[in-house]
Length: 112
Image 1: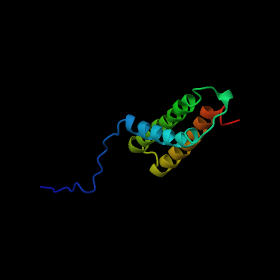
Image 2: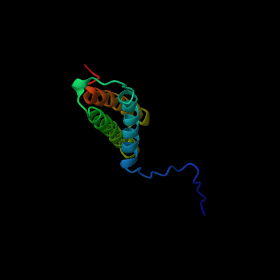
Image 3: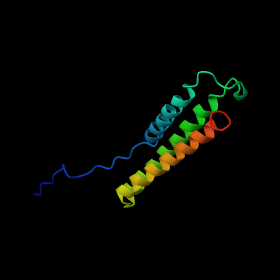
Image 4: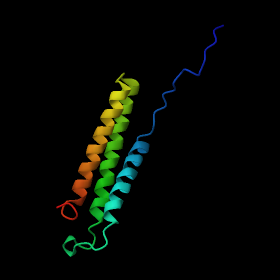
């Protein structure tokens, strides 16, 4: 009878796609909230509801960054991609995507 230890076995339970997307969207919402809700006297040219576009676009960009992390996590777990490369690439894509989402959300208002 052979005795096996479960301490070294890594269980590969896939994370649902919604979890990293919600985390990315929450980071994007927190980032853009600092800018949007920090404006005391908005420019009248921006319109009454100028906050809506940044509060939608930036969290959506963060959610897409979370989806990319999910894809890279899948590739590193099942396809043999180097885990360190996957995490670094995911972080870079997330940061660039979040920056672009912030710019696209604020263009025409705070980003001139």
